[in-house]
Length: 313
Image (cartoon, rainbow, N blue to C red; front, top):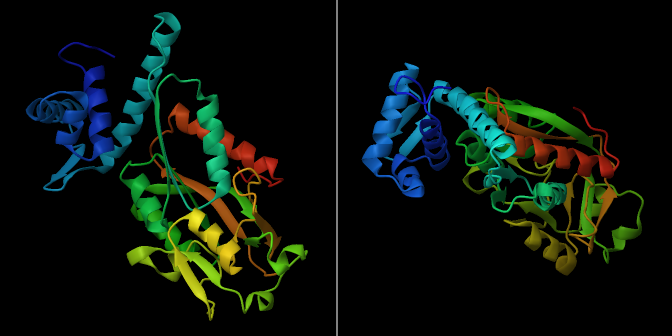
């Protein structure tokens, strides 16, 4: 790749990656300690050299065009490969590791994240892990706040989730199929059972994750969301839901994967229903993953396989 006046420079690629990540030319300029006019001119020059618009500008900032999203994938790969080359042949120290992951509230996602950070070996890194609402996961990945998202599909919500992903230029890649379980406190009377039925849960508080303004059944984090419950509590984070399982003998429905290290007071009991939960990860369909994202996915697969789940990919 030429560094001359007629080519696309590495500096321009660095600038473009930061603009896409920040969603703002001025914010990227501040981050890289350059003036806003310099950054704006650099983006216009880059678009002129590419011969097509890469950014969609508005009063609220910038978003990527379809060409811009594809270009970002190539830019990330080039910058990453140059950094690896410099480390190997020029003795440069490893660059600051970056990765963002957004996910529904799964302990195996956190387990894999912990393993990735511990094994990164980087002197500097900036990772983000957001346990958040289903709609926000899709938006985070669409807007490049996160490179990867982790969520579930089943027969009930599949059409809605797939349409949202298609409209956002994202693809769902299956990871594993899970049998539904309830999560309850170890002190709950049902904790000694081999299996439970929906009838067993009729008098217990049902705990669900709040989906905010997008609180439709199809975006619920739990299956069987359309079934009515006389006692229901919505929460916003995993620590709260576990505290309510212990304090109120409540339950939630999830995958059955629970970390004894992270959640020692909670157990998973199979739920006797004719349903399956398909867990997968989402990313931009036209953009190659960075090496750091691939490393995280490798850890995610290892954690899931360690719980005896058969991988689907």
